[in-house]
Image (cartoon, rainbow, N blue to C red; front, side):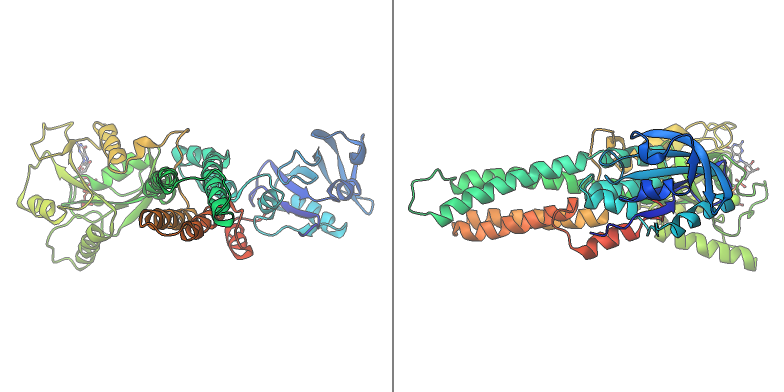
Length: 446
Ligand SMILES: Nc1nc2c(ncn2[C@@H]2O[C@H](COP(=O)(O)OP(=O)(O)OP(=O)(O)O)[C@@H](O)[C@H]2O)c(=O)[nH]1
Ligand SMILES: [Mg+2]
C-alpha cells in the first residue's frame, strides 16, 4: 500500500469564510510542523487538539490558521491526520497547499482519503460508497439513508450472512474431507433450511433497490395537461419560487422546464411542459410534441385537470393516453371551485397548496418510500445490488443441488461463489479494478 503523505483542500472551491486542508500519512505532522509557527510544536501536541498559529514559508507569512492534530489510529484514514483551517477563498488555501507540496506532501487523488480509510480497515466498501451518497444527497431522506449505511448497518447484515455461509461451507467441507469419520454432519435438509433463510434475507435486501434508486436519482416527473390548467403554477409552488412564467393566457409555457424539488424528502425531477392542444403556432406546436414525448419518457406523470373549466374532451383524451402509466390525477384550482369526480383524483390548489401533502403521500406510497427509516437498510448502489443478486442466484443453485440429491461437493462450490459475491459488497474479496472504480467517483479532498 502506498504510504506517501497526501494533502488536498477538502472544502469546496469558491469563496467562503474558511477552507480546510487535510493531510494524511506518516509524515503529516512533521510536514505541517515545518511550516507552522505557533505556541506549541505540532509534533509535541497531544492527539485531537487544535492550535492557533501562522504558516510561514522561507520567512514569508502565508496565512493565519488553526491546525488540528489527530494521531493514528483514531482518525478518518487511521493514519496521522492534520487539518489546517486557512482563510477562505482561492488564494490563501492554494498557497498553503503548495507550501505543503514543497515540503514533501503529495497531491491526494480523488477519494484517496476515503480509500485509505477502506484500505486500513476503518470502513468497508459499502460504507465508503455511502460517503459519496451523503455528499451527493439531494434530500433529507436520502442523506439520512446514506448516513445509516455509512454507519455500517449494511456491513453488519452482510457480515451475518457471511458468517452463516462460512459455517455451512465449513460443515460441508468436514463431511467431504472425512467421509468415513464419525463427525457431526449437517443433513442436506438442515443445510437447505439455512440456505433458505439466507436466500430470503438476500431477496429482502434486493427488493429495497427500486426505492433506493428513487432516493438517489429522483423521480423524473412530468406535469402534463391542457393549457392554462395550472401546470407551471404547480411547479412554482413545489419549487417554492417563481421558476416558470405563469399567465392566464393559454399556451404560456413553450419549452420544457426542469427543476429538482424536494417534496417531503422525495427528490422529484419535475418537468413543466407545454399545455397539450392542437395548435397552428409553430413554436407552440414543437412544445406540444415535446410534452407528448414526456408522457412516454417520464417515470411519473402528474396529470393536471382544471376544476374551473370542468372536464373536457381533451382531458379525457389525456386520461386515456396516460392510462396504465405511473400517474397521479390532480384536479387543480379547487380554491375557487369545488371540482368534479374523476377516479382516484386528488383535489389540489397550486395557489394555496391544498392537497399537496396528499399528493406527496401518494407518491411515497407508489414508490414504497414510507418504508425508509433510519433503522432499515435501503440499497442505493447498483454495484452492491449486482453482487447481491449474484449471491442470491448462487445460494439458489446450492439449494437446487441439495434438493436434487447430488453430492454436497457441488453445493459447496455454489456456496463459495455466494461468499465471493457477498465479499464484493463490503470489499473483502474485491479486485483492485472495482476499488479504483468506486473511489474514482469521489472528488479530490474526500
Ligand atoms: N384560483 C386558482 N388559479 C390558479 C391555480 N393554479 C393556476 N391558476 C391560474 O391559472 C392560470 C394558468 O396558470 P399556469 O400555471 O400558467 O397554467 P399552465 O398549465 O402552465 O398553462 P400553459 O403553460 O399555458 O399550458 C393563471 O392565471 C394562474 O394564476 C389555482 O390553484 N387556483
Ligand atoms: Mg405553463
